[in-house]
Length: 487
Picture: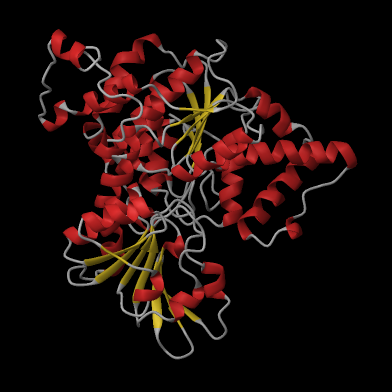
């Protein structure tokens, strides 16, 4: 079915739901272009395809349904997997990508750009629900929403079995968690053991982003994690490439597509100087902006100073800066009271994973505030005194809401790690190698991912002699650095 409720042609996977299947041809053209820019994934298909190591494996993905993700999906499918997919953000889906995958039947897809929160969690449940099965064998997650729904579902089913208590959306003020509880309330009344059975079926999850990894570690420390997890985010070829170089490319792309503003000469505040903040700060400086960093971590703050950036508090610059970008992965970074102090038409956006870095709920509750939609994912909030701020992507990821996210080449690094993580978890599912904890891929695989991408850039590696390798206590073929090395 498509979003409007009309049936898709019979040849298309019957349980997909996308916005417009007519966009599939356009999506397929862009997928072909992306394949050329994603050498890691294409080489992985060549290396493992004949062996079909994922044959018979059911994989659910909750990750931005973009063209680049389409290449990941079709890589998993080429290795034998059956795939169901949803997006992990209401604004990040590229409808032509979703349609191309649905039409090719390489996955069932439940995603469209501009989902409501209710639709988003419906899509997540559909991607996790496997007809005739208790659930997926494996999960590819980005931000942890698929993992969260299983864990919360099992917990709520146990409460229902104990005393008949059903989830109640009224128990929370959080609009998104209300939707989660609504989904679970309906689900438990239809099938009171669905999520518990699913939790037993899942053999592992590979997690894409910082916030999702943080959630997993918290659950593991409390003994609540129900299946093994591989932390893809902290693979060097993810965190130092996707988070730094991807943001360096896609942040200015999103700001410029949304506003057409001249970045050169503007004062830009980047909140946070981790990997995402570093990429964002360098992008803004590269475009000619005068960049100011806010930080809580003295090491990151010192790094920013040594790179020539001013480090200040938000209060120091709130009324002077032109553009504000949150990158922290924390909550409540820019509040409604802060936005009220900004200059007229200051631009406010976020490139951290979730939507709680910018106080959108507080902004919408300001007495007398008016909202004018300029175009999709660009809104001007006008305060009673007549001045306003321009908010991008409703506080969600502006690079995906207002543009197309990271480019294919850098996503090839991230998604090759995802594929290798899925292969590793499935291969070792019964070996006892992985308990219900959070693990990193070995450095040898990290180096392999980097090695796969070098020929496309015309790079030629120098080879160590045996005596040189012995001198620094490594193998000729690597790994070349100890696990403590920070790159």
